Length: 166
Ligand SMILES: [Zn+2]
Image (tube, rainbow, N blue to C red; front, side, top):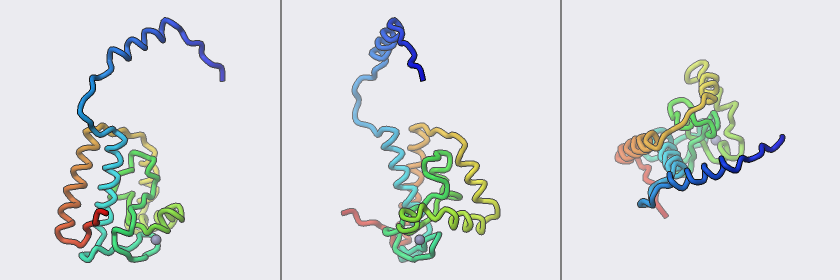
């Protein structure tokens, strides 16, 4: 690839523009990336806690191993890198054990089979939908974060799911 020659006048004016539009320092707020992490965290809790029995135990979606939800993970069928289905807890995220989720690439084939058992054609529907581009605003993220947190608080009243903070 050939490098495009930079235009001095252009780069100078864009520098000035950047200076002008720079925001004044404000109190510390979450960045978009930090907020995404918070939604991930509470979405994971929501999926696992919802799947738990009242003692806080659930089964791995792909191998059936039972454990306390604090030792299980929330696994994605279509990769988390696809934003459109990243927080689709209804169709794309299920409770999984660490070995299925981390060491077996999420057991994607088994995962898909199980989804299709829930509802025929679900796995391909999720796969197709995952590829559609999607952007979340800070406000979108905040709304989801608060929704997941509120649901988790409700669940924690009736199930043994409180994760002790170290
Ligand atoms: Zn498993």
